[in-house]
Amino acid sequence: MKAATEEDFLARLDEHRRILWKVAGTYCRGDEDRRDLVQEIVVQLWRAFPRYDEQYRFSTWMYRIAMNVAISFHRSESRRTRDLMPFDEPLLEIAAPEPPSDESRLLHEWIAGLDALNKALVILYLDGNSQEEIAEVLGISATNVSTKINRLKQRLRRELGTK
Amino acid sequence: MELDDFKQRWMEPDAIRINTRAVRAIVRAEDSLRRHWRNVTLELILDGILLLFTGSFVADHIREPRFLLPGLVLHLAVILLSAPLLRQLVLLRGVDYAEPVVAIRRQVERLRIEEIRALRWTLSAAPLLWTPLLIVTMKGLLGLDAWALLNTRWIFANLAFGIVFLAAMLWASRRIEGRWMDALAGRSLRVAKRHLEEVAQFAE
Image 1: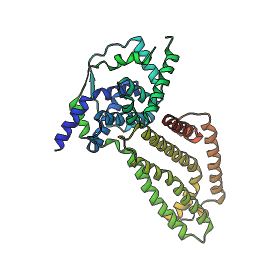
Image 2 (image 1 turned 180 degrees about the vertical axis):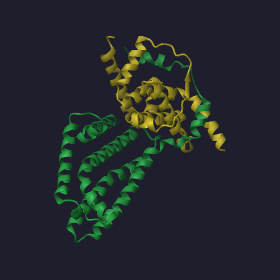
Image 3 (image 1 turned 120 degrees about the horizontal axis):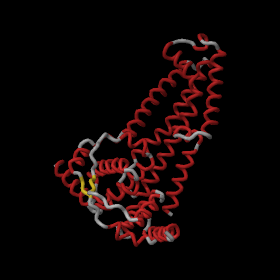
Image 4 (image 1 turned 90 degrees about the vertical axis):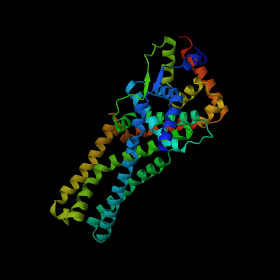
């Protein structure tokens, strides 16, 4: 039974591995921090998996956990990394990433300068989630999501518009 | 530059894959991250023992002001230092990462504020508690009278040194940065409170 649960967990994790990659990549700059964060997210996902309710989308549940862990991790990075078990193998492997374009680099730098909650909002928006889905993950109203996205778009135009 | 222009590029599939073997190893040894919870619990157990010890010391020396006073100071200090820990434990137990992000962020910031308050109390109280701790420990554990064995002037000098030391630490904390100094000067508390306000504004 436990093996079946583990297989199910691994299959779902694999299907939504992009969430891990995007969240860790947005909240951490260095490779080592990113690897530690992915590890912590996977541990928390596994711990919460027995309580996962099938009536909700797996991605919504995974976004919530990944972002909550990332935000907590981000706020107490130095202490947390010391608490992680030593584990050298990365949980996510990437095949020879292409160097980012200047525009992509600028956008990533801009996102890195946002506060933790706006970062979460941008990830969810760029990942193509609807306003209702974003609202469900963040726990705010869909109208609020729409307002905040518009403000972020204006801010991006203002700050990077001429670059 | 438009946010929507990046959507396509952002959503392009990345050549990533899950290292299944590593994930299996992690999930089979997943209990390594409960240290914070464990540390707070251990501190509370220790505080409970100290509370019993100082409480019984106070009761035993109720008619001896020279022991009663340091005993009461310590007893009160243990109560004041345990309160934020207890609140931390309650908050920690309430954290469910599957809850909406804004709610968890609020909880995490509250937890952080409690942590900083506990650290600030501990750092501020430590230099002043040394003398009462010496008097109570000597009497309570060894049956020795510190007032008689040590010079009274020496005891008051220690107390005065504690006050001067604390004042010096507070002065230094306004000039030097670092985890302890930031907590002592109230900088980290201000930052944590600002973060909590940001969360409230985000949810509006």
